[in-house]
Amino acid sequence: MAQPWKDALLVYVAAPAEHADVVFYDETVVVVKDKYPKAKLHLLVLPRQPMPFGVEGLTRAHIGLLQHMEGLVSSFSDGADVRVGFHGVPSMRQLHLHVISTDLISPSLKKKEHWNSFTTSFFKPLAEVLVALEADGRVPIDVATEHAKLKTPLLCHKCSGTFRQLPQLKKHLETTHPSDSLALSSTKRAASGAPPSPPPKRAKDATA
Image 1 (cartoon, rainbow, N blue to C red):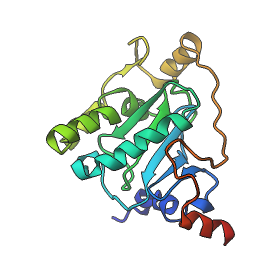
Image 2: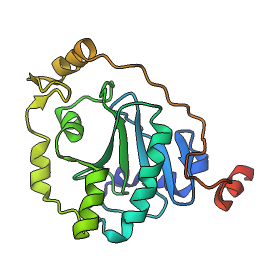
Image 3: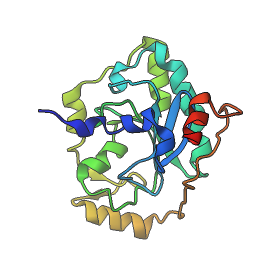
Image 4: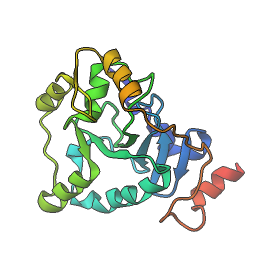
């Protein structure tokens, strides 16, 4: 069965200047706000080159790209405490790196699977991915094992409290672990390590 929604991220890499939710792009990557954010700050970092696979498709040849992604993160986290990594089994085909604040407070976080995808080892921190690639040249993924992690009990990621239902856990976060409000400018801006001037593609888009 065709699932065109799985390729929805490709519109951002093809024409980043045309999308208001893109906060930065250069010749290599695009940084975009997640359409259904699972926290107050939730960004995706996408390679401009089509890469229709998840973390299991990465090799040593991708280390430079991942290091470039890593170098951009601090410029867009606005001082927030964030987690940076990949889902073990992504829902979208284009490779995408999550940059997500640890408050995990959002109306879009509706399911147990949403919660566990960011608070269990289903979430693969970028730093650990880089270590694995440098050591072994790959990140092994067992799909069945990863999916099982999404069904594990709900645990508070800040105090390890257990909860039967997600609404109870979300209420616990708001009352026991309140977070500072965060804001992210929608203005496209330069980041540290970015080219000092826009690449030709961007200049062309800007005058079209």
